Image 1 (tube, chains in turn green, red, cyan, purple):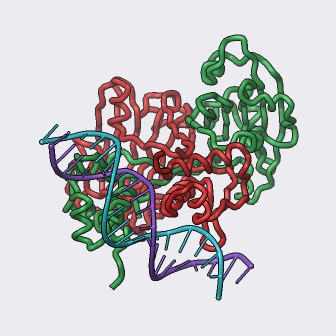
Image 2 (cartoon, rainbow over the protein chains, first blue to last red; image 1 turned 180 degrees about the vertical axis):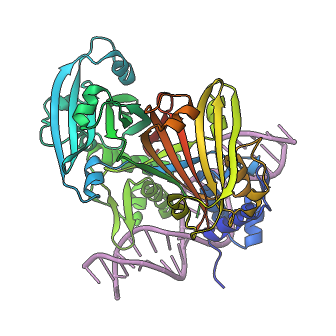
Image 3 (cartoon, each protein chain N blue to C red; image 1 turned 90 degrees about the vertical axis):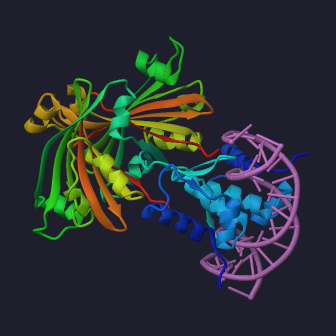
Length: 235
Length: 235
DNA sequence: TAGTGGTCTAGACCACCTG
DNA sequence: AGGTGGTCTAGACCACTAC
């Protein structure tokens, strides 16, 4: 007979929830008791329950014990691809183009989004990413030069600012906000679509240790763009 | 002096990556060696490195060791809220409305998305979710009656199908695909917006043990809807 | 085939929180 | 105040795989 693994314990608890033997709000037996039932060490049960808690299936509190949660809102995982990888995955050649570059005081919404005081100037870039003969993404980006002073000297003609920033500032916190909007005349022209056509907009802000690095507005033609996410069951 | 925690080890490795002492592609020292350096048990180092691997910071392979990964595409977390919670969080009263209900053979794209054979009939629901006086979401849903036969008898007049399904089929796998589209005339009328206005579309498919449960097309007025995701740094 | 990660055990101490 | 989870240790065996 083989030893019981933490995966066995995990699967057993999940099966009890699936079958209805354990319902939302119920208390799961304590670690010591489960270890006895499964004939394993307490650490083994601990790891199983800890992973279930990370997956959002149960909630654990000292003294109160482990309780089954409501299955309502679950976190989903979504891979945020790099533009280049996203395009090359489709088999189309990738091309990057720098449309404009200047150092200027950002408009108020951008300034507040970056947490800058009025009057401060920042690096403003406008870029276009091509998938073959089609525009895949139009990028409007502001970079906080207080946090990334080296960006002032960087040349963004050959490579996009995203790749550059990832190299310069690894392990930062990123926030994405997605929405659907109708393209303005200027946006439509740069995206090679009709004015008023739906565009998929990603607003991305990046922070490191509480300081805002950059804010990007990424626009995709709505007819082609798709963004996928999945919620995986534990185990 | 206190014992060294797995969090200490994790933080130390992360700091080495941030500072550039460990670069993408580099090999992290083995568990045994790190345990010696930190003066702790090997399991402690193991847990630190395991969590870094789960966060996508490093990659681990037996015999090959632990290597620092490129920081390029990182997984993001996104909370998929229930419509009701999403609306009530804004302070607006939530109202649900069933517009249509019938059992019919689904159109081909839906049928294939659900993995059904031609001719099979499924439950088709059209619903509307209100936030105060504004339409928040228009829902077009197909339910696979082979997998959820009890849905045939369920009354979806008082409560939406999503809440019902979550109760009936916990711990299922969910896939979301987001896009931006221009509203058709009918969609615009039901959403109380202008035809051609941008709408934020979520296509949601749910599976349990490899079998498709349901497929929903959720439409939001683009002017109001926002969807947020964040990539958190490990630790 | 040897080195590296993956996991289990048994025992211990501690932190937190509820009753 | 005591029960429950959180974590560390020291030692062991196993699984995988690069060399």
